[in-house]
Length: 164
Image (tube, one colour):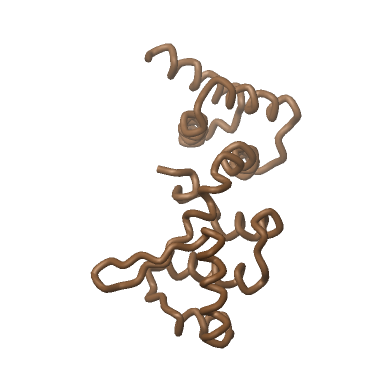
């Protein structure tokens, strides 16, 4: 499973934080956010619902969708005669950046505080040794035991790899 598909990854916040690097205009951002919202709640999605949700004319929505498709951020698929709006490509293009940068934000959110320089350095070292998903699994295991400590997570990582 990709990082942007995990339940703790905030897709809409990530889009908003990366507007400039993604070269998106305001209409494109709004349509992407609406698509993500409707997809999350399995709501019917079409030009009419996007037009109503964005308060844009249907022609503007259509032009915006065309622009997103041409940028490679939106793919329209069909399944059982239903159109599926898939925006995963927006995350694929930046997937490595997401994983390496957001891991610090994930730790800060879970710890409920800003990481110290030493903690950030330790996480950077882990990224050189372990894969991203292994680090996140170790974090989750520590949180299950209510151990919000880099040292505790380090021991989980070391123990996990001794057994392999």
